[in-house]
Image (tube, rainbow, N blue to C red; front, top):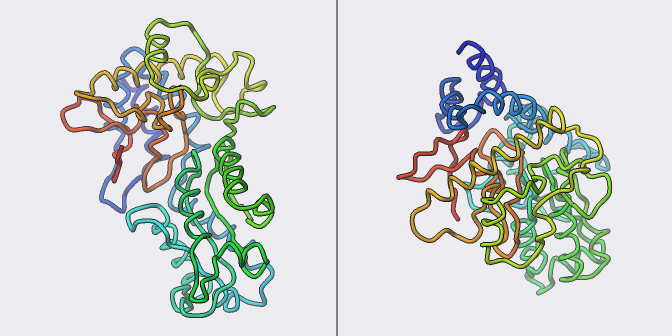
Length: 349
C-alpha cells in the first residue's frame, strides 16, 4: 500500500493546482481511487503517468511563464510597452468560461506585476496588431472557426479584416500553449483554401509545446496515445462498428513508430499503457445508456467522420483538460460509476 501512496503523492505534487480557482483540490486519495479502477494495472498506470505528466502538465505558474515568453517576443519591435499596448488588441472571441478569458486574465496580471500596466485601458486606441491567445490547438476546428469569422468581419468602412491582413496593414499573431501537428497543418490548409495561399505567411504562430501526431510526416514523436494493431477482437469489432469513413489509416500506429521513444518510459510500456486506457475507454462507452454521440471515442472526442479511437491527447492545464483526451481522465456523467482523475467543467458533447 505504501508504494501506491508514494506514486500517488508524486502525481499529486505535479497536478496539485488543478482547478484550485474553482475550489477543487485533488488529493493523493483521489488519485488512488482513480488508479484502482485499472485493477492489477493500478501501479503501472500511475508509474507511466508520473513519467508523462512533468512533460505535459501546465500549472498556472508555468502558464504565466509561457505568456511572458510570448509577450517578450511580441513587444520586441516596439519602442516600449505603452506603444505595444496602444496598437495591440487581444482578441476575446470565446465564451467567458473558455480558456481564452483565463489566459487574458493572466496576461493582465503579468502586465500589472511586471510593467504596472493594463491592456484594458488601451482598448479604445486604434489597433493594427491583433493577438489571439488560446491553450491548445487540437483538431483546429475551434480556432479555425473563430479566426475565420474574425477575418471575415467588416469594419465601419465595410472592409474585412482579411483585406487589412493581406495588405500588411494589420498583423495577426496566434499564441498557444500547445499545437497538434495534424490539426495545425489541417487548419493552415483550410485557411489557404478559404482565403489565399499567401495567408500562410501573414499569420505568426507562437507555441510552447508540440504534439507530433501527423502519421504522414516523418520523424514524428507521436507524443499522444495511439495504439498499435494488436488484433484484439473487442477493439476490431468497435472500430468496424463506427459509422465513419475518413482516416481509418490513422487509427493505429506502426510498431516501428516512433523511431525513438521519448514520450513514454519505454516502447514496451507505451504499448501496455495505450492498450489499458483504450480498453478502459471502451468499457466507459459501454456504460453510456441510450445513443452514444458519434464523436465520443475511447481515446477522446474527435470529428465523427473519422474512423479512429480518438485523438489521444495528453496535455493538461491548471484550469481544465481537453475533451480530446482519453475518457479515463475526464469522463464524469451522472449515473455512471467511473471516477475521473480530473474533474472537468463546461464539457459538452
